[in-house]
Length: 180
Image (cartoon, rainbow, N blue to C red; front, side, top):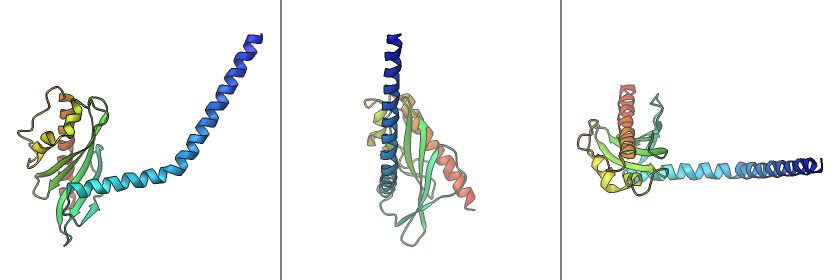
């Protein structure tokens, strides 16, 4: 009997501690969420500028795109003419979700590919998709992606990366069609 009372008391104490901790984390999250969101938006804007440094501005593309497309922007020059399209796409890698930004010129050729997030992948293999030696082989490619090689030992991640680029081309075609 006494043992049961002690167990119940311990359970009640642990539940109260968990509830107080959860409440404290919720309050902290409430106050820090706007700052986190603003920081994420600033990082995304900087990534766009890094990908297309000569763009004067970026216009959000609002059309129905494949669900893997996180964002789509049109890069504009000083005169407001389209320069290229930026698609940020998510795919399923070996360890989790990967995120790739693909810049496709108005001529349908890749201007750049940037690895936005491969943090869930192994750094020694899948993480190599962030290296210029891998991403650079996409530059100048059309939708066929001929000559793009997978990373030996990281075929799941590099296949997912290629899939992200292929999805970016699907989105590119949808955007071009919507603009007609």
